[in-house]
Image 1 (cartoon, rainbow, N blue to C red):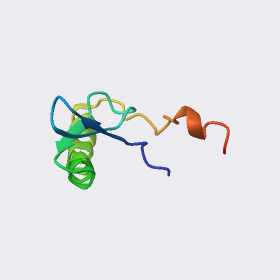
Image 2: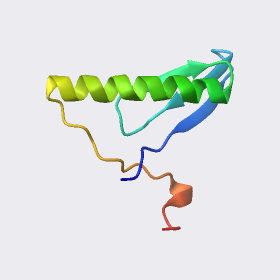
Image 3: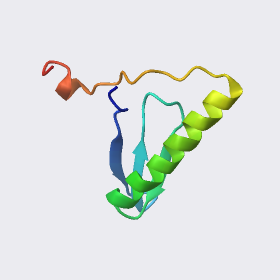
Length: 73
C-alpha cells in the first residue's frame, strides 16, 4: 500500500512550517522546522486514522498526486 501524500510549506503568518495530508480532511500539523512539522503530522495522522476507524468513518485510500507527478507513473 502506498502512503498518503504530504505537503510541507513555510507559513510567514505562523512563523513556522505546516504539514498536511490532502486526502485526510483537516489533518495537519505545525513545527518550527520541516522535520518537526513532519513528526507532528505523523502523530496527527495516527490520531486521525484511529478516530475514523473507532467512529466507523470511512478511511480514504491514498489518491492525491500533485500535478508534477501525474504524468510520471
